[in-house]
Image (cartoon, rainbow, N blue to C red):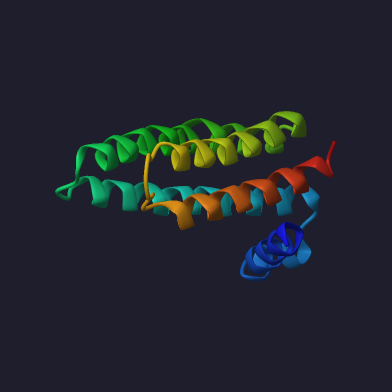
Length: 139
């Protein structure tokens, strides 16, 4: 089931981006990293919206932790992946893409009960896995 899901994520993202039709593997990886950035940005905006609300302690702490983790995705993982791909160093790009997925998984674990970010975290993990798989083709 996981392979089908990742395949569908890959095809959906690449079909929705006109750059993909004539892209080489590096450009396909960059498209996927752009999608990763878009997902992380959307989730970060949602976290900020939720944090403005009247939340209980555990949920607020979980969201604050997730804000830090998604900040790491946006400020470290995505820029490292882009720079590594542009400089022909796919090993670092693969690690950065994998790190983004780890951050999303850590975010999900930040909640003792129900997470309001389960869908977003799963989506980022999926895009991260696809990005890392495409980058791995360059190794």
